[in-house]
Length: 331
Image (tube, rainbow, N blue to C red; front, side, top):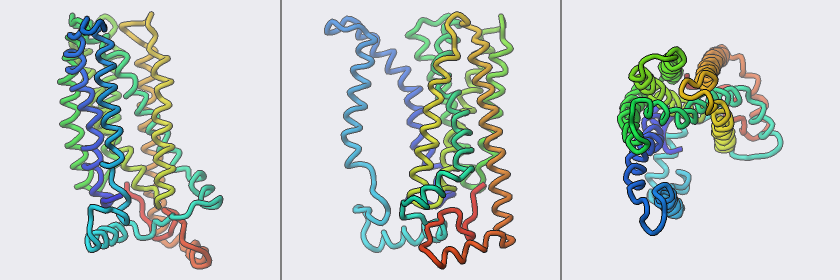
């Protein structure tokens, strides 16, 4: 990490908005590419896969030289800059060290309930993220748009999400607070699904408004969830393993989303919307458990309740990560 914990959210959200921009620009690009139908003997949908796949491959190949190394090894910094950067990071999380991976540290990592709760929270949110692609075209077609026109109509939805995501990220860093923004995103998301569930035979335009609530809520909460968990995993190895577990659990939600939007239930999708709403509640519950757990643990350490670990640290290398008594969790 190159930034202190409360400098990270707006930067990560800037990176993460590639997903929002892809959602908006991707719809416009697909609309343009499908017009290539017949060119070279290929259907329009084939050109979408060819062009977008080629772009992804080229960018991935260049990433080897574009992605920065650890701060201690960053070649684009001189010695003084590297020393200053390392010192800034040490001032922020000086106690959170876990630079050796062995059976003992792996057991400590995998036995951390907070990491698994955070992964469950992210699983709930990602179920909604994956679900959007299944019902968004259906709602837009109900408005009378063709498949190509529906792609264009997704752009304002993702543009709104971009604005709110940046605003939430900036405020989260400035206020030194994460939990409230996760809950705000979940609440807006749940509101959107509540409208979609209650719209049997109702106005299609109201459903379109609900899409704004769902997508905006998702992109307020999901980037904050990732940074919140990652910044509370102390040490390189714990952060690497914990982040992989969190993202892996999030990607598993694709199995859920792809099986609950049943074609015969279109356009109402009672099972799909219901499951997505329920998983948003799971995400909010997970966030609340984490918040309470972090607050109680910080207070316990303030009272010296974990100081007994200091003797163990003196007797062995300090590889306790965020279990160190001097470490305080971001809330």
